[in-house]
Amino acid sequence: MTPRYPLEGVISWNMNTTCNYRCTYCTQRFVDDRKQSARDLPAFVAAFAGLPGDWEIKLSGGEPFRHPDFLAGVQGLVDGGLRVSVVTNLSSKRETLAAYVDATAPKPGVLSASLHLEYADPDAFLDTLCWLAERHAGPVVATCVATRETLPRLKDLQARFASRGQRLLAQPEKQDRDVIAYTPAEREALLALGGHNGLGRIDPDLSGRPCWAGARYFIVDHRGEAYRCYPARRYRQERLGNVLDGSLRLALDAEPCRYRYCNCTVPQGRGMVDLRDAPAASA
Ligand code: SF4
Ligand code: SF4
Image (cartoon, rainbow, N blue to C red; front, side):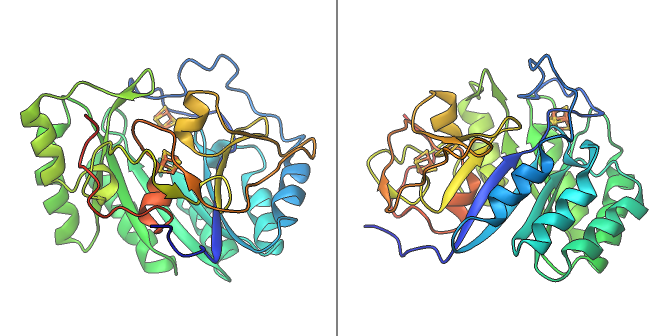
């Protein structure tokens, strides 16, 4: 069944590749050029603000707060009428985080904080998360990648976060852009933690199901290259053009999914694809 037309579309923008961490599981770590030029920022903002209809933009990287003009970019997007969400490692100073919260207050999106146990102390991270949750008008959530080493710690960590009113969601580890070969017991543990981002699944096969990705959801990289969704970019299929050169073309309707597994939280979590009877994992 085709899900209802999503009134608010969503863009996932990997706005930079720069980061102050070097996590072993980072999917960006093979990118040579981790420097970021602010040169194209006004063109990006104008292109996103010019999209017809209502849109939320999810900023990620790299670490988006490391973009040299991050807060100016956020303000430009807010002024352009977009709802702004962010995925951050939460390592920025509180005054910078507060400036972000203030800028997005008119139309707050989701603040998703990634706990990277190779770098961050969980207690300090949780303190900052609680401090933010009191100030941010939109949802605040934490995530943590379930590596083989961290997976056994996540149940306790989830309880610690819950005791302070915060959610900690697990994310499957990917290497070479595929979910790693978890054992059946590890998969069970991951599902008991809520699956990928609390969606109850790890890497479901949704192929053939109508999905609004490509029309009301798309992803953009730091060079402006746009694809239907993350699996589309992985396979270099369903390229939608480039945001910066004016060649972006979105589909008008939901179209069948072509991919063996879906790791896109937004279409799954926002009802853009019908998940009824979907398997917890791809075969
Ligand atoms: S914080 Fe995120 S972007 Fe930075 S190295 Fe870790 S996984 Fe990569
Ligand atoms: S992989 Fe996921 S987001 Fe992409 S088309 Fe399929 S269901 Fe939609």
